[in-house]
Length: 240
Image 1 (cartoon, rainbow, N blue to C red):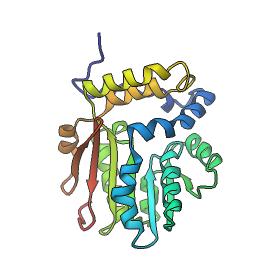
Image 2: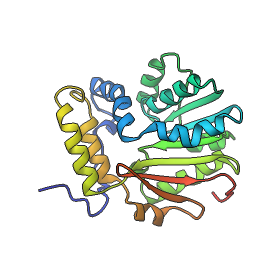
Image 3: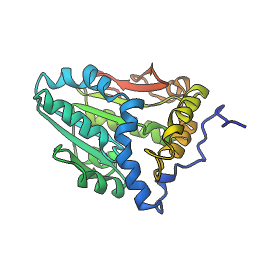
Image 4: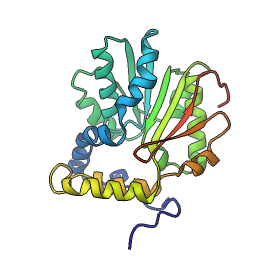
């Protein structure tokens, strides 16, 4: 019998979120994220549409919430360096294992890695031109999600952009990920949590309708391919 995708599987936890998760498997997972996210998340599209145009107007501060192993931050830093654009990128994660691994594998990207919560940055009075996240929303319940949206809106202020990106729960998404990762289960993805946790994350994810029902006024849900969701708050909207 296939996975039940009729509702969010909020009681199922991803293996890598376990504090006792195997350290070597966790490291392999962080190491493989870049290759997987290049296909699943398409960071190039985010860069061309939202980041490069803003960076061309002057130095920008970017915050990646729940950055994990920091692969998205390093990919963005590489593109910005190639285009000779000034930027300050902060990779934020509440898991010290993630920030420690990411900092040790920065490879000259110049990303700032911080182990903290979004609320900590709000209390510190931090502000950013672009606040983003990738594959974080499905970890959050309704109240947690609304709190994060309020906090990330505060960090962006009236002039900043907030973009939260995730996968959409659907049978097609589940089948596509299961089929697409199967040939690599014994090689590229072996000894990592990526395949098992990827399927769990789809079960935990929101649909576009569910996300729109939870999001406060001023936030817009966009659909993308393959099976992508984006929750955005554009500059100029001062509602948290």
